Image 1: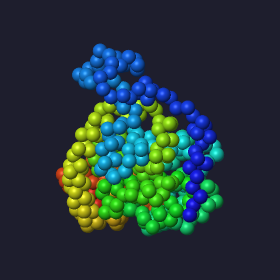
Image 2 (image 1 turned 180 degrees about the vertical axis):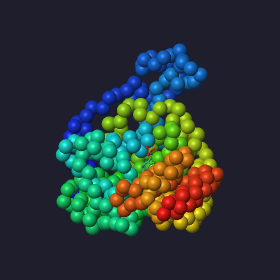
Image 3 (image 1 turned 90 degrees about the vertical axis):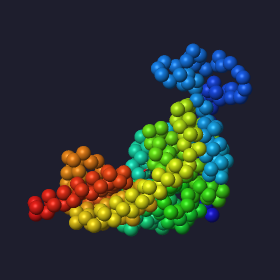
Image 4 (image 1 turned 45 degrees about the vertical axis):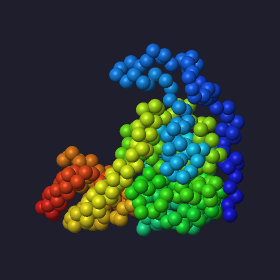
Length: 361
Ligand SMILES: *Cc1c(COP(=O)(O)O)cnc(C)c1O
């Protein structure tokens, strides 16, 4: 068993912090009150939106109650932020002392862990996935034992490789390491595997990240979720900006949570389109390999120079993600599943590029 001691991981200044107490922190009663406490504009809002003149609930209680009900957890186990990216940044600021602490990432993976680390002046130690895109458990545990990192980032399904990582490996790292283990499940709704949210009772050092940006189709509202012990969530709440999730976002999220069946239908359609796109891409000469995906995108190894293909697609107004300079992703493009019409147009363009490149040879 690990020697997990939450208090020992938290930065001293955060433990000592007296958080800002907003007007809505000091008074949150319900009922018939008149508010003279927050210097809002009592008369209304400028523009066609009239209902936005009051500050939003700083703890998003209505949204959390519904998420808690759907996920079978308690509201105190939920943090909501301005995208998952806010949760990632807050984890650095709660746990990592600039210039001193280290974290572990497993490239190729999501770029924000590195960027957030650099913003916070935290050393990133990379323990790459194996060439088969699996966690190198022994190497991670050896690095963790040597470095005592504050955070270990695991992304499953992983971006940009698209695959779910081994549950056994994730459990082994959670059990053996005294660090906070962050499992980023941005794409979990597209995966056959179950969420690790159900592990929260077993692992006090687990933080699970999810988002409204992908399966829910709500990237524009910027709403990310972190699930963890009430103690970890309380630390994130101490450090967050008081009103970090705005009122329109909370209202739109509540509306979406009442329509889960719509999300499931979108996911079903995307999975069907993904299967078809994968098959059609694999049949192209210009494609060397389509990697299996548990997400809403495909990692595709090109049989031609990936940068050239990327630029030819761009010239035709089609933007894919060039991952060819990323470790283990040489010659690879990452392609998000589009609408059926968009996918057909992409395939047609790739076929033309294939012919163009064959003529040049
Ligand atoms: C898209 C994505 C997110 C989502 O970030 P938001 O800030 O919630 O939009 C998080 N993690 C990974 C790995 C992603 O690919």
